[in-house]
Image (cartoon, rainbow, N blue to C red; front, side, top):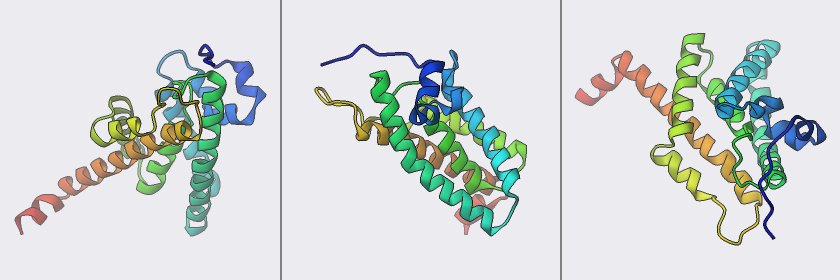
Length: 189
């Protein structure tokens, strides 16, 4: 039995913790570019969390735990919300962008706001355009004919953003290496 797609609403956001998480505390309700708004929310919330925790090994352990829990909880929340909306990969589900941008900022940190802005732009490019490996990851868990929305789609919602985050990190690492002369020197020796 097929259900008509639903739109995410404020009442849906507050009626279930899975929806609150998946809809990015409301950032996914943006009528324009919810993925970009969700990523901006991820950026702001990470800065606040990191500032609240301070610096050091203990902070890294807490952030690693938060990211691990966010991955597993994200699959659950994205699956539940996709089912509720009757859409396998709803645009209003932005936890995947938030989580992926947290991962980027954690792995590349500490970095100033310019570096963070470059990471934001690169991640939005990879997430929106889905070149190469990101497109492959996006197609990997797509809903098959006759299949009900389930954990595969929740995993798929999260997975393509993980790949977009990894592509972002590789691109930024290459840019730093080129800027520092590491790549050209390494290739010539």
